[in-house]
Length: 349
Ligand code: HEC
Ligand code: HEC
Image (cartoon, rainbow, N blue to C red; front, side):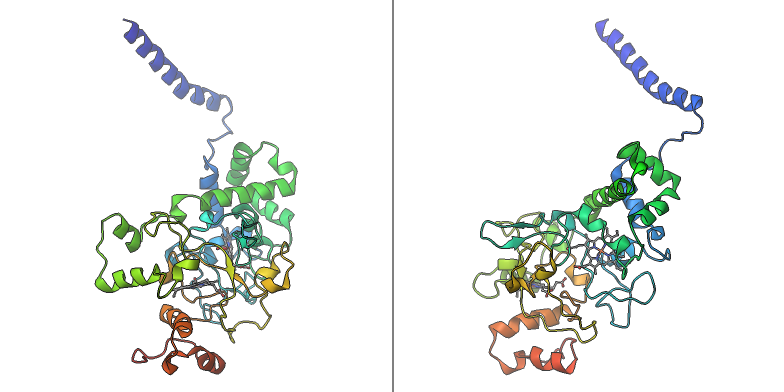
C-alpha cells in the first residue's frame, strides 16, 4: 500500500512538472522555451555564425573547420600557410592551429623548473579558452569587428542568443557590453570543451583499445616516436607519463625554438613567438613556440607556426637533419633558401 501511495505521489509530481510548464507558458504566450538549453549548444551556434564578423563572411569554423581537423582548409596567395581575414584581403602571419584538443592545454603558467608552459595561441598569450575566444572577433585581420560593443549588437540581432545568454549566464547580462561579450566567450569555450573537440577516436586510440592492429610500419613508427634512444620525439610531444595513456595529446605544452626556417610566402614580420606574450619579458624567449599537439596532424598540413612545411614527411626529414650526418639529409638550408619547401622525391635517401 505504502508503495502504491508513493508511486501515485511520484506520478502526480511528474504530471505536475510536465503540466506546470504548460500552465506557465499558457499564461505568458510570448516566452517560448529557449532554443539553446546549455552553454555548449549556444557555443556551437556561435562557433558557426558568420554574423560575428564585420562583413558577415567568416566564423570561428572558417579557420577551424571540423571536417578539416579544425584547421583552415582555404587556399590563399600564401597557400594554406596563413588565413584570409573577413575583409577578403588581410592575411595573418601564423598558421591556424587545430582547435581540437585545445581544451586539454593547461592555463599559461611558469612550471616548477622555471619554464613557461601552456596557454592558448602559439605564444600562450591567452590564459584560457575563454580569453582566447575573445580575440578573433575583434582582430582586424580576422573577423574584423571594431569593438566588443559592436559584437554585442550582432548578438542582440538574434533573439535566441539574447534569451539563452540571459537564462544561462545572467538576466541583466545585456546591461553591460563587456559582460555580454564575456558571456559569448564562455559559451564558445564550453562548446570547445565538448567531446566533439576531443573524440580520442583515431587509429591510434583504436589500437590502444584493442580495436585495430597497427601495420608493422605503423608500429615501428610508434616505437621510434616514444624511443629515448633514437628520435626523442616524446621529450616534447608526450604529455602523460605512460606511453599508452588513452588521453595523450602529444604535447607537453612547453616552448622551444627548434630552428624552423622562415616561410618566404608569409609576411616578413619577424615572429617573436613566446616573447609576443605580454607576460614574458626575457629576450631569450624570442623565437620559441608552443609545442603543438600532434592530434589530427595527418590532416592539418601545412606545418609549423608559419606553415613552412607542406608535407609531414618534410617535417620528419627536418628533424632527421639533426640526427643524421648524411649529406642527402641536410635538406633544409638549401631548400629553404631556394624557396622549394615540399618533400624531396621519394627516392632521396
Ligand atoms: C581568420 C582565421 C581565424 C578565425 C576566424 C579564428 N581563428 Fe582561431 N586561430 C587562428 C590562428 C592563425 C591562430 C593562431 C594565432 C596565434 O598564435 O597568434 C588561432 C588560434 C586559436 C586557438 C588556440 C589553439 C592553440 O593550440 O593554441 C583556438 C582555441 C582558436 N583559435 C579558436 C577560435 C575561436 C573560438 C574562434 C572564433 C571566435 C576563432 N578561433 C576564429 C585563426 C583563426
Ligand atoms: C625540443 C622539443 C621537440 C622535439 C624533441 C620534437 N618536437 Fe616536434 N615540435 C616542437 C615544436 C616547438 C614545434 C612547433 C615549432 C614551430 O611552430 O616553429 C613542433 C612541431 C612539430 C610538428 C608540426 C605540427 C604542426 O601542426 O604544425 C610535427 C609533425 C612534429 N613536431 C613532429 C615531431 C617528431 C616526429 C619528432 C621526433 C622526430 C619531434 N616533433 C620532436 C618541439 C619538439
